[in-house]
Image: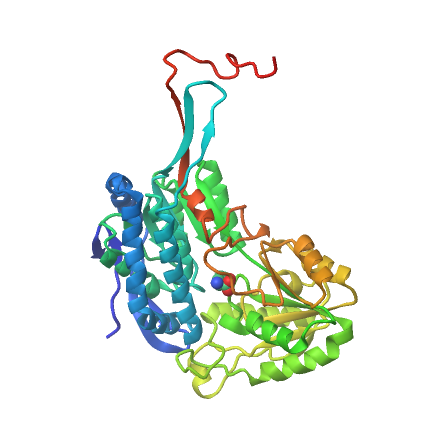
Length: 498
Ligand code: UN1
């Protein structure tokens, strides 16, 4: 019998009000049901928001360090449960254990960052332009945050959003991706065990078209944080814009790794292998474009193809495997469709391109690591986010051309250059239009205390990671205290130009 999971509303585990359910299956063994989950709708969201509104004041009234203490404790519990969480995550979304441990670790790091931040939510003080007057700022919660998270980092990304939302004193309605409800449930259990009071964190499982939309439309949700596709991000921004809701969006990427002729080639090959095929290419920051200088092209491609062929594809629970399955059948079809598009566009399929079949492969959704060469700037496989193990290689003849190709894209999340020439490195830092630039490291590997986000259509200007999301989840109040005992008029009583 598959385990049954529930929504968590006002401190109670409960079914969807309609009683509807969906199954969540293991992408490496599709006949294995990871759990049966509520397929919730508008009414469930309504109930969750009611609870979140009811409990706002009691949570906001707790001193920030006390909220921090609870969140820090949840980090301790996550440390104890790291292995259990990693295994569950691999079963529900496929990536290999090494990576699901890393994903959990990023959640732990983020919990401890929140704990530290609880003693550091500094405001600003400033001299006044008038005598006997003090000025400072404090930050208040917005109210209730709607958190809509993706399946590729089922622990880290909810943590990036929920810890800052909670520390700032907001209550939360959390809709995890339908492909990863089990890890999300674990996280909510842990927060509750650590002492987050009832009604403060509410979990509603279900499809974006129902649960996501209901969160978006609800007047009592004051801020939404979303990571996912640009199409959904646009829709969220539109509705939120109409309702003057604050929204933080983390969207697509088409991240380039440039390799110059002076680079350490073996190191650069290691980088692209990890960046392109780690997490089966299913990262917003995945290396999906290799921009390779013509002088090293043939040598580099020989080594890269040889090394890619050695990657072991299979169930992520088997420690010796390097690459797990893709998340589900529709994603696999989308990736295979991009392989067809690449061929039609005239790119050369240098490796892979097929669904893996035979033996255990038939039980899940496995895809060969795929490399296209002869990719020209502007082709769809060079411009569009595929979100799978597909690398497009573009040959360039100069540093300037590399930068032009890297930037000629609607996204701007991550970027990388391999070079030992400090001039190339510094100019790349200056010119690459991306929120993250790595020098001699792949496009993946962001750390939780640094800003994470992108230029251009990757988002709407916000950053996750570090102190930046704390600004997203707070309202700043400026306080003026006049202790002169008389009416003082700013800009009028003090004519500083006279
Ligand atoms: C993502 O790319 O979807 O930077 C998130 C990394 C991870 C987070 C990635 N720490 O690779």
